[in-house]
Length: 155
Ligand code: RP5
Image (cartoon, rainbow, N blue to C red; front, top):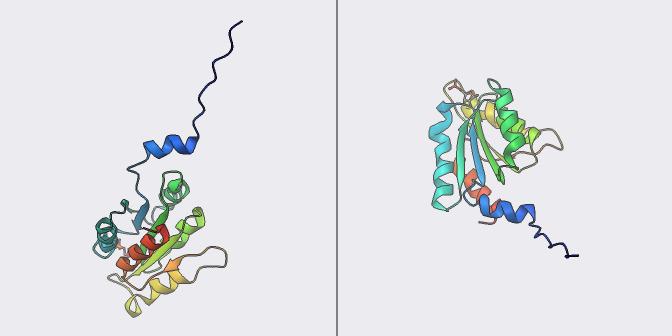
């Protein structure tokens, strides 16, 4: 009788480590295309530091299902930090944080109809309920969000 040939068992993490080498580590999301000029500073900072990122536009109020899907799949896709920028009643960072357990950095943004220079968005981002944290940088300071993301990643 011949002995069975032992099968090589590969750990799933080891398999994916090879496959996911180009996957982005930071997701940069924003509530509107109008937020792009401010949020591009985060992409620029991460790119200069050699940190892979992706940029997406999705609105917590106008496209709630899209935001939920993105946040729920983020960790599985290899993302490690999410930067979320929004203006006015800026729900996006909080909604992303509600649907995933990755660190979320909120960027309160000014927009055409902001009140008090973006205080509306600042309070919306920072006043999260206990247990659902969002780190918050200064108004329109997407660059600091990228610097913080780099520190979280130890990069
Ligand atoms: C927010 O409303 C967006 O993040 C943006 O800052 C603001 C205005 O959006 P648009 O009317 O320019 O699409 O949800």
